[in-house]
Image 1: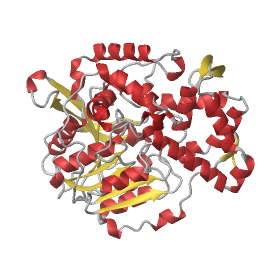
Image 2 (image 1 turned 90 degrees about the vertical axis):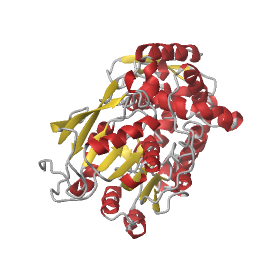
Image 3 (image 1 turned 120 degrees about the horizontal axis):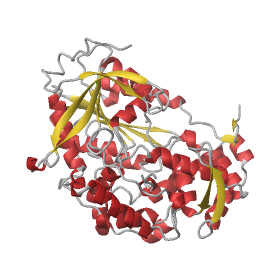
Image 4 (image 1 turned 45 degrees about the vertical axis):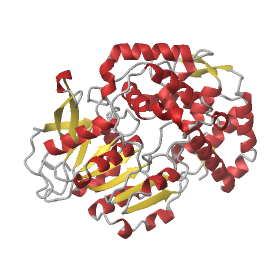
Length: 489
């Protein structure tokens, strides 16, 4: 059983040699290891260690936990460039998982910069806080009682110490890791929720940050979840518009908007039983196709231009009562995301740092109800957070950030969770920044086009005004599928 409610709102070995100017004698011993992709697609040599930190940093008597840490040495053994710390998203994702999935995108950076992978407390190999929640397609007519029971079971499993997995504590872990490795200054790459971690670290330890890359940016004042339904609606609107503007797509699906509208109307209240082949086992399973399944499909397929390239074909088929392909995609994508997230850590962050402030945010439920996601997200979070223990949160976590750290911000034009406007909000307090927007792209730009080269260029020379980003002028998103066999040649 995999957790799913969080998914609603919710990528030439050289021996270790420390950069001379960036590092002093490390206090943390490291040993040779290999970082393996979950599917064993890649195996990367590294140096690994364990960092022991207090569970409760304000009361060490509560015990300690071990954090999983790995360093991929710079290929240039003589480099004195600061190391790059990778801050994963979610909340609940492992930095190591992000790196092994996108190691190729970090290859240019790794020429001169060591890559440091600290699994944030509660994720990956760092005291993971995981629980089982029913999948969306298993939900009864009224899912909230089942949600409450699953949450109570999760808290009983993890215990009250689950409250000590918030961002405010995690950034103190991050600085302890920096010091233990002997680094004076570091670079940061944060994606999605990792941009919150990065910005709080920039606030707490400004002299320790050499440069920062924020990808899929949350702004400090933002409450995760409140804007997600409307952001998702806007992203879907941009994807539909891109199809209308592409001659092949427009000719193949001339009534695409009507197809989508009919689906949303039909599955506002209607439920249809569908038999599909389980994407994992291949065995037939029966599921109820409803507004939650439809909403999950639209949202997750909006996350990247590559996935969005399937949307017109899937919407057109579903509008003609061929629901199986869309249902299969919904389940497959939800599972892929859910397998990467530690649900307990996620709720410790969201309930303490976001949902706790929902009541004062004057939620416009009528506006949310008009989106394809509706109010399901905030209603589910409310039920979870009524039970979830709340942990320490810095008083200024949601205050505007003012920083002199050179910062590169990356956004996808059609991002369904952190649109470019969020990065613009964050940039208001950044004295030295550059904001790059990739046309047609979704959430997270790490592997998009020439972005890996731009990241390396920026970290080697962190002067935002001097970064040559002209390669983005030639960038185009993935073409739409004109049938389930692929796009036009």
